[in-house]
Image (cartoon, rainbow, N blue to C red; front, top):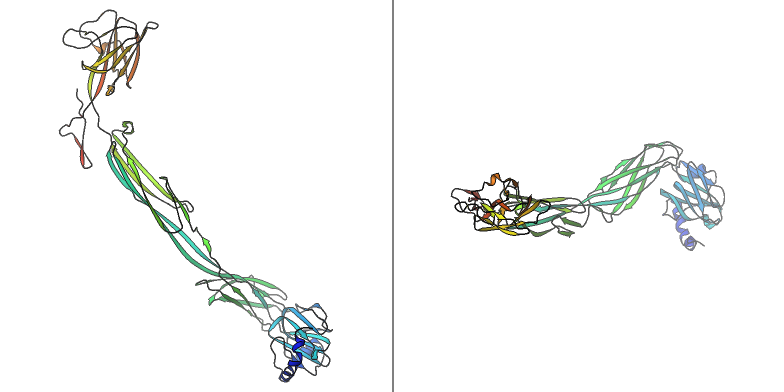
Length: 495
C-alpha cells in the first residue's frame, strides 16, 4: 500500500472541512467533492474553475498515454486506486472520480507531474479528468565560465660599449627580468532557453533573462511559434565576479489566450579557463637558461677580449657587435642587449734591411754585399745589415741543370712588402765589383717566412733579399693619435 494510505484516516476530516470552501491544498492533498456530477472533460473542468482545455480518461486510471491539444498525458504505476501522472504541458487540476464523489488536486503554477493520486474515500477509481490552461513551457541551461589571462614580459639589460687595445679584456654584466601579469575575467553565464508551444494556437513570445541583476543578451531564431512548435534561444551575460546562483528566464506570451512561462537552472563557477601559461622557460643565446612561475630576474657576466692575432684586424682596427637575445620559450617574446667592442691593433714597427747569403765580398772595400760558392746540399747564413742573422739559405743538389735555393727567415724578420723582394744571379766564375741586384737575372716575390726558387746550376750565386726587421716603436713628436684616456703613437720605420 502506498504512503497516503497510512495518513488517510487522519487527514480525511481536514480535507472534508477545506472542501467546503474549495481552497486548494498543498501538493499531495486533494480537495474533496462529495457530490460529484460527471460529464465530459469540459463539463467537469468547468465545475472547479476556468480552464482552456481538458481530457477525460474514462476508465479506472489505466496505465497509458493520451494526447490532446498537443499535450501528452501519461498515467503510470496505477492499480486502479492509486496512480502517478506526467504531462508534456502544464496541468492545472486533476479530478479523480470514485463512487459518488471526487478528489481534486489543484496546481498553481501548473505542474507536469505528480504521484500517489487516489480516488474519493479511497474507493476504486471510475475515471480521471485533467484540466489545464493554455501556456507556453520552457526549459533552460546555465553554464558559468570565467577566464584568467596570463601575460609575460621580458627585459634584457643592458647595452655596453668597450674600447681597448690588443690583449685587453672587459667584463660585461647582464640582467634578464621577467614580469608575470594575471588578469581575471570575464565572468560569463550562458546557455539556452527552449520555448515550447503545447497549444493549438499560434503564439508570439519574448524571452527576458537576467543573471545576478545583469540583463542577458538573448538571441532567438524566431519570435512566433506555431501550434506544437518549439524554438531554442541562446543567451549570455557577463557578471562582475564568480558568484554562484540560479538563473531564471521569463517567457512572455504575446497571445492573450496563452500564458507565458518561466525556466530556471543553477550555475556554479569552477576553476578558470587559463589563457596563457602559468610557468615559463627562458633561454639566452649566451648559453644560460632559467625557469619561472612568477616574476623573477637573473644576473650574469660575460668576458670580451681584444684579439692578439694581428690577422683579426683590418686597417689596424677590430670591431665586434655582440647581440644577445633572451627569449621566453613558450610565448616567443624576447629582448636583446648589444655589446660593442672596438680594439686597436698592437703597434709593430719594422726597419728596412738588405740581406745577402753569406760568402766572400763582391768588393774588397765599401759595399759589403756577398756571394756564395755553390756546394750541393749546403746551407749558409742570410745576413742583414752585414752582421744580423736574418735566416738561412739552402742550396739543393742540381737536378736537370737546376738548383733550388730556399730562403728561410728567423723570428722577427719578414720579407719586405714589395714585389720582387728576392733577387738571384748565378756566376760561372767568382764575381767582383759592386753588384746591381736590380739587374739580377732571377727574381721572385716572397710573402711568407720561407721562399724557394729554381735557378740554373752554376759555380757561384749572389742571393739578395729585401727584408723588414722588427724593432721597438719609437715615440715620434707630434705623431700621436688620441684614443681613450691615453695616446697611441704611430710607428716610425727606421731605414
